[in-house]
Length: 592
Image (tube, rainbow, N blue to C red):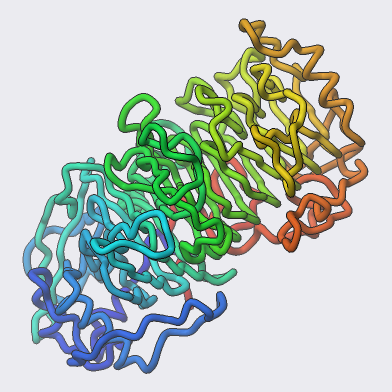
């Protein structure tokens, strides 16, 4: 894999951008200022149908793809920034057709995408997220919508690259080519024009269809990654370079912003952390915010203030008809994935290097997650870097009550700055949870902690027939294997559970090992007793009429070295060299 995509032959040789067959030198020579991208077409782009599977092909002919990009620029506020060399070292000025160009044709997304839009994959093209990019205008918390909102579907083709530029340390040149083939390089500063954080948010009533392929994922990342200076460890250019991807839906949540409004109702909403204004929540349990399949989200996560952070991936009030499957979040400066309420299920998550929690669930989330591989890097800046946090603390009896079903997970938490007074798994605040088929390995942290008496309160009903508190009882554990220097965090805080109480609760389940040894080999593959531990049938945890959770014969996210669901579409961090990804996380893949 090259350090960055080589587009010399695409932009400069022969027909100049052969993917856009009608382009000539004059098309390339005038970047910026709403430049026409070529092709001469003015028709409306045809978005890929949401029903198309992950192996979708570009819509129409090469010429029609050119026309689609043309239309984005001419009618939808997209801006062609021209050919940009990131981290450029060539001298500025006009030269012959050397040195070869190594960079991207950058297309800036508008702040609002308010109609159905296709971002086609074209080698050498990267789409810029500058500040807040909204998909649609909030349609409210009910399926009826409102009079002020607007729905939009954003379809991102497999292989497309979307990136943000926070402006810090930017080094780049714009390259143009004249009719004779001579190149002109002009030094320029950051592409960023925004004063706030960069993130893409899909608002209530709108959808994103990012359908990557196993060998060609959709990548959301930062400019430093394109420039070749992103790193996997340390503090410089390793995380927190942009704000991530947010999906705001209309599914039920708790802890409504407006006092007196019933949780789970159409009028119950909250503001997405880090945005200040974006609302989520409603009464549409089966709401659909689109599809994320074979997607990487790299180097994101920003703390706006204490308790007000942007994550890697933030599904907020997202409904059960949304698909999240095969998604990697790499080196988020906050949580990898934080789910705020809603009913969305998720499967095949790879979370590498998150500074805070790998998976965090809050405010009435009721969903299932299966096959989660979470691996911390050894250096970390968070004060409480957990693997999961299941949390409704502060408003313990707000309804709907949170109920997480987590199956087949492997968490590796080898942080150098952690102590036994911290834990990998944390459940508190009256949240209900069932955890099965899990493996947890830490080097210094405790494996688990449960806090607050409401968390272990007796059930007052069932999932099918809930009681007044929608209480399903204490957390349930089956077929989990823990390998930590301290099994339970005995924090001794007033009102919290003792280590003995947590131990009794955990060992009451079937086939649990609280004090294991040598659970993993090759960083994340089960070995020894963990490899032979009897599995729990996760399919029995499905809701009536649901078939999301599947039966396995093993515990952990990955069965053994022959199980390769995580390979090929992920990127490989320097601290997980055997992940088997498409390439290193510090580089951008190229495709033949």
